[in-house]
Image 1 (cartoon, rainbow, N blue to C red):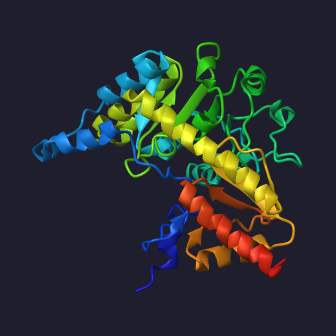
Image 2 (tube, rainbow, N blue to C red):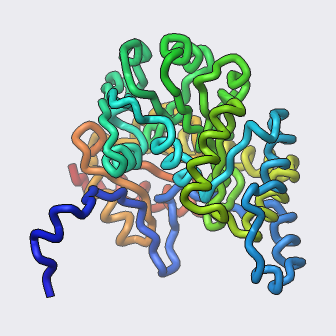
Amino acid sequence: MAVRPELLENIRAVEPYTPGEQPQEKVIKLNTNENPYPPAPGVQRVLETMDSADFRLYPDPASSVLVHALADNYKVGEDQVFVGVGSDDVLSLCFLTFFNSGKPVLFPDITYSFYKVWAGLYRIPYECPKLDENFRIRKEDYYRENGGIIFPNPNAPTAIYEDLDFVEDILAHNRDSIVIVDEAYVDFAGKSAIELVGKYDNLIVTQTFSKARSMAGMRIGYAISNPDLIRCLNDVKYSFNSYTMSRAALACGAAAVEDKEYFAESVGRIIKTRERAEKTLAELGFELTESRANFLFARHLEYDAGKLFEELKDAGIYVRHWNDERIRDYLRITVGTEEEMDRLFEFLRAKIRSGNVIA
């Protein structure tokens, strides 16, 4: 039975975010920026020692064990840390909590596409200043009245990182607006804006366990800011659901943070593979942005990216492609293991050797 039109009139309708494909068959999966290596060994030990009987109890609503681990890791107060079910949950709550002035929120035209979804969901006006011809943010575009600013650093899907002087310039020009720096990929890049939190009371920095800490399936994200803004976030969270994170996620997250040596080793492996992949793709005729993330953003002038995406998929190699006018010539390629990248290069070499141009 179809729903009557008069019922639909008052139902909230939004255009949802489209996630990367999650194929169930065994493929080379380079399309969702997951870490190809397992989490820290301590995570496995936690899972092995947890008593399933404990799952009858609600988790700690304050997420104390994880908040403490993160505060200790970043040398901030526990009242400066907010945790949630992945950084998407954290960012969504940030939109709902801080972007309420009625003025347009600013974020780049090419960026994480969930920003538009949240803005639509919460009825927040927004504007999208265009990246320049090299896919870089023009900081001068953010020197104007706004209802808040958010941008990833490194940006996605372009993989471009801006240094802290750039971030600080935007903060300094927007003292009366909340500025959120989404650092999902910063561990592969450079300095984090967390070190600016003590200087700017309008700054919120968000990060995730899904990339560098290999825990996308556990869903852990967090924000670091000043105590006043963190308190506001918690007030909104407790208005939805006090028990947002599972007992397993809290314990495993804390274990992952504590193993600093494994974290550094895993990040280093991915950066090393990324640099090798950049060199190999360039030799194959690809043009790439300067990646400071765990993925590459590349195009080949002789090959149609959409068709190449489909041919790779047919070969069991999944990458990401968008039909957006400005980036339809590009593929986003997650950095996988050395073996996975070799399979990608093998396919591309055969394609280029065959002379089968599909532009």
